[in-house]
Length: 432
Image (cartoon, rainbow, N blue to C red):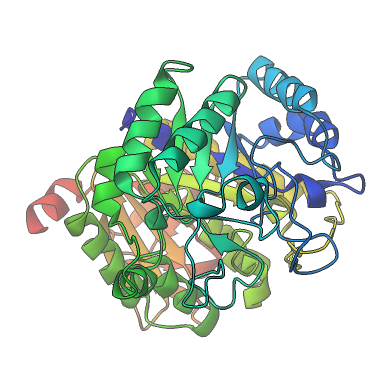
């Protein structure tokens, strides 16, 4: 629902508890200049409210089992700390969004005590979670109109401080609620950014089969959201990353994505997040990391980094126990991220269609967009030369600024990722 210029921004995700030894919002604020220096435009804070005590997982509990929507976790800081962080971000040209966890609360939440009728009950009259593994939460029932008013009131409180929301399992909350919430919050802040964690398709079906809400991505997009998660295609991406599945398996999913969603839909693109393994846990060498990172910044959609990704971190921090990132300087990785962001901003016009040319035999992928051709080595299959689909000659690699030779229509794998002005662009467009 926003201008597609959002695609040339960079989202950076942080869980304050694990961002520093202290685990506070103040520490995140102190790191904003470095984060901004990576090219980040939007800071996403994982939940800043206190976690419940009852049935909690781990010592510190999941941030997604919220005890009180309207309080700031005292271990993370205060409302004033959140305001200060946001003001500092604004001074640096950044925006701040916070996690909204509206499908459920902790079993000992303020709402279970004060409004017990706002929750689903099982056959024995107990509040419960539809998902058995989510044993530390209980599900809210949006059939209760008063719940809508309370939740929107809470959003308004945050809208007066921050710049938008990342909405957890948004598919499980009625699209009509999100539409009403966005309209109501516009009075407080007309420029809010809304990101939906739209869910895996089998999970949406599961919810519907159980008689619960399971909204489609089209419904979420049309109701309220500027950007949607990538969980319809990401499972195939993960198979390519982890198990060397055919690259075409993923690009076929991306094509279906483009065909099924409204033309204005924007997807979030990522290699990892707090729910998914670290990309470097795939056993990549530095070259594969560089290729995948360059690809992240070459796809349609809004690219995202999860804190620690800029040092090629392998360990995924726990969200149930404080597990601070062991920060170290990785200048090469940080410089590459900055370079890829600059290339994206300069060369890729938002919303322009992408033509995918996967090469399953070589584990490579070519992209065509904006009159440019990009080539990425996504899997290590031992090839020194990769078909480039370009006439022979010398080109300038726009990722690096270095000259590259194409011989026998092939590129040296050491020269990938490759981005060049495409002399065959007009022909490729006609062949789509």
